[in-house]
Image 1 (cartoon, helix red, strand yellow):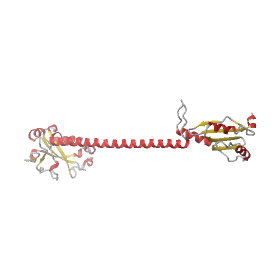
Image 2 (tube, rainbow, N blue to C red):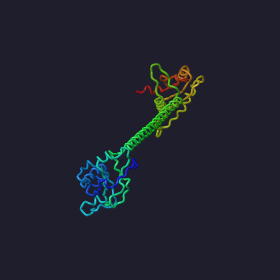
Image 3 (cartoon, rainbow, N blue to C red):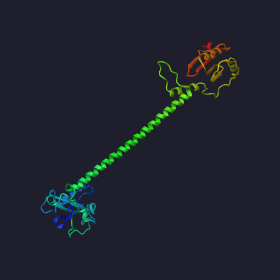
Image 4 (cartoon, rainbow, N blue to C red):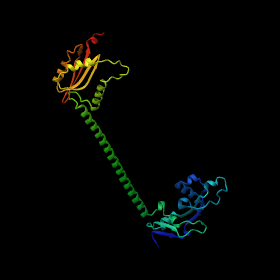
Length: 309
């Protein structure tokens, strides 16, 4: 006899065909509660034994219940017939080899007309599960846990790499933006005790400064010929000063000159050239030293405009 797979004659088992139509169909789908409720039905046919003394298995049978559809509410349980097979727990504990894996009947009793595979009727389940099977289940659970941990670690590692990669891209974009601003505006002038202005703020300030040199709305503005004023400015422009002009704005009410010169001395000579411009008064020149040049801004207004209240 095979010590791992035991086969006993059907006379040694308790048998019954249970009609589960009396149970709630929603509850019979929950197999733990279903087994308990089927056990109460099985207890009614056991010869003077309580269901707690018997270990049983239940297998669904095909076909409708004998009384299905014959009484009100029976339709909800139609087709819920179960074959119950059990043994007393004392027999399983005393007569079954601890190394046995399965215990099945050799055949079905004569009153069972349905065909069911005998391999499905294994009594060594639940608390009577064979030790080798339990060890195998624990091993599979351990292997599954290790695989799950490894997969989780790989996913976390991949996400961390993506986060670091995106952070490197952001840092690279910020660095590139800073280099472009420095190429456009030059390095920020260093002033002792004063924090350096960020490149984005310097670029915004430069944009606003350039926007101030443009008239916001020229539509409907009266056109005035300023060529004579421009001619006087160009005539007095010093030839010995190498200036890179950013803007030259000439209107009847103001003259604004923005230029880059090599040194402060050149900025002073440029300002001195327009001090005596007829009819115009030079305001205090504004100069800002850069790394390789000096930005100078000159503003002139007519004398008669200053006399107005």
